[in-house]
Length: 118
DNA sequence: AACATGACGTATT
DNA sequence: TAATACGCCATGT
Image 1 (cartoon, rainbow, N blue to C red):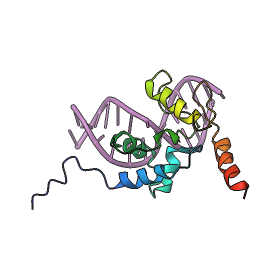
Image 2 (cartoon, chains in turn brown, yellow, green; image 1 turned 90 degrees about the vertical axis):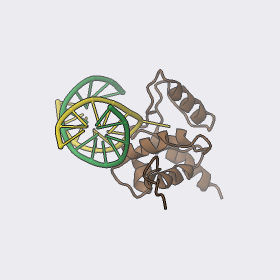
Image 3 (cartoon, rainbow, N blue to C red; image 1 turned 60 degrees about the horizontal axis):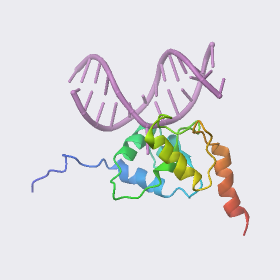
Image 4 (cartoon, rainbow, N blue to C red; image 1 turned 120 degrees about the vertical axis):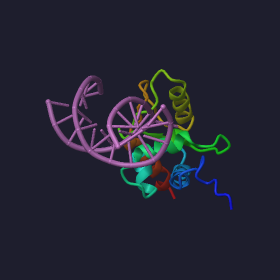
């Protein structure tokens, strides 16, 4: 058979990364490094970034719930992606400072609130 | 094969 | 908190 799988093939790791991101509950966030770890790919935060760039447009993924380890949005503050991510997060009730920072601990707390009340 | 680049992370100052 | 340096990993040139 003509094996053209080597050309423009999606790395086998991408679907796993996408699955982890898709499983992030609304109103909560994860760091790139955490996503990598949960996908069984420790120390591969940059691979997560690549996977995000390669997300097919048809696939709706909560990409905005992925932040840098310091809780800040990875896009440059003046970029379109930055504002888009801010808006999406805020529309989910996540507090984002003007500089694009989210308190990761607080985001984890909001998940606790969901499970807190029976 | 060497070098640059990137939606990153951690340690240090 | 911010700036810097270095480590890490996949891709593109």
